[in-house]
Image (cartoon, rainbow, N blue to C red):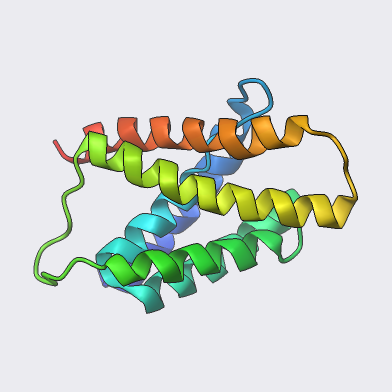
Amino acid sequence: MPVLLRIALTGLIAVLLQWIVLGRLRLWGAYPDGVLIFIAWLGFAYGRRTGAVSGFAFGFLMDVIYGTWGIQMFVKTGVGFMVGFFQNPDQRDMPIVRPPQAFLMALVIALLHNGLLVALLVLQSGSRDISIVFSHWIGAAVYTAVVANIAARFVTR
């Protein structure tokens, strides 16, 4: 199967999994972002262009599902592009990310992603609720890092 088709199908599965399963696994208002983990991995594995294009495409699908119209697309495109700067130098092999590395990388990426996402959502809605900082920014970043750690345990085997 061609690489582009495989990425597109896996991304669609990631968006559906986010929408149907991960978006409903809320803890204190926070939920993990599986699409973010996938986009970050694509940027790390294939580079800036693939990370940015996948962030744009799958962010657009997230905008359609959650009704945030452009915010998810903008933030995920930026994350895919920025993570692409740390691309795997050896193009022959897929990068192997160990679970502790996956946790730390996902935590940093999710803190940056969710911070920008929360700032843009607050500007859009005009909310003054401080709980959004703890649930959607910090809580969701930690939750995403835990899910990345679990995913890395299954993928590396």
